Amino acid sequence: MTKELHLLHQRRRAGILLHPSSLPGPLPQGLICHDAYRFVEFIAQAGMTVWQMLPLGPTHSDGSPYQCLSAHACETRFISLDWLVDRGLLKAVGKVNTFVEHQQQLQTAWQAFQKQKTSVLYKHFKAFNETHADWLEDYALFMAIRAQQGDRIWTKWPKALRDRQAAALAQAKKELANEIGFYCFGQFVFFQQWHDLKNYAQQHGVVLFGDLPIYVALDSADVWVHRDLFLLDETGEPTIVAGVPPDYFSETGQRWGNPQYDWPAMQAQNFCWWQQRLNTQLTLFDLVRVDHFRGFQAYWEIEAQEETAMHGRWVEAPGEALLQSLQQHFHNLPLVAEDLGVITDEVTALREQFGLPGMKILQFAFDGNPKNAYLPHNHEFNSVVYTGTHDNDTTLSWFTLLDEGTREAVYTYLGADTHEAMPWPLIRAALASVSCLAMLPMQDVLALGVGERMNTPGTTKGNWQWRFDWQQVADDLAPRLAELNRRYDRG
Image: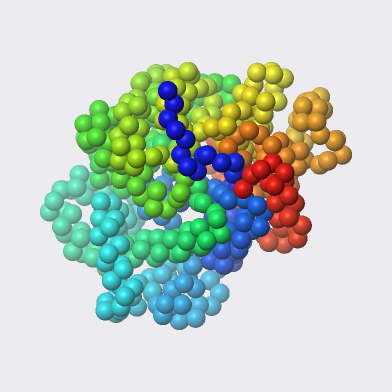
């Protein structure tokens, strides 16, 4: 018997996929500022009710939101300095062109904030620290030491700090008290600004849809603090790493390198670490996608010394016990399962047991097989349909690069007029699908082509940098989308 669907999955909805980094603005990435609020208004004007984004965690130098320094903390580069000006923590800010300058301004605000210990905002800061005590102080200490150590990975720190020896941590807390406070302050400001935005979205009938990577980065506060929950050696280096086996896309598979969980140790603690992790995400979002959901049923483990994923093996994971624990803790799970790739019957059964929608990608549908699960006539209500995701090319570029015969087959299947330019026939197919939720990448909404994708899997350069400009948004775009959503009974 399948579980009753979560409230958010019980009606037909539509939304837009856009990471906040892709919002317009003067800095190298978007901010939680006027443009974010304007984007909420655009979604509502388009007759939609969902804003989906990628993970919000603090990234490493490659900028990937799927390899973060924390499973709880958020990226302070999203912080709007105007918010700090409005609260008297900064004087009027001139032009800030770089994130170095942005962080300098945040440091200035922190120094001013420490002089306001009798203010209401400071009391809120103290309350925030207490509410998030299960991760915040450890994260701030981790970041302060990491900066002191020249941003080296924690496995290369002095042994006493690497191994979290009590005397070394006490000394670090004393020496780095100001820096630790600054990192706590940055999280406080981010969460305050985010909840202001979330409340504004709620007022406009828009829910926020987040993303939860199944694995965490080795160079993260989580692994440093919870070494007992990961498969590591005595120096903190992984003995087993994550990845996926060879397939059609890669002869050697993908060796992601994330440390694998010690699932028995996690289960012995009733998955407390996962409960805390999801609790943080559900303070930020109304709905959360679980990336690589199939890893909850069975995961591909690779010996750390292996250079590729070819010689790994499948190991069963306690996914049912984990999801039962989360369900008991949260009562209902507003989750979406990323179930792309080669999915077994066991993975599907686990997803259905907990009533979680899977994903349908229209760009994967047109291989000539009428039983292809991504074709709209094979969709089911409890699913989320996408034209494409952040890992796909834009629909227009994808279509342009197809051979002529496949392009004709796409138009024929969709019953579309060949004079109607892509991506609109695929957008209409997504909105017309029986799937309960239809998500459109902003690039497709803007009908953008080659060179406008967010990420190319398997590459490390040139990703996560795409942004749009309001000048690209035609005056008739929101009404056009609103009409389609009315036609297909979405909201």
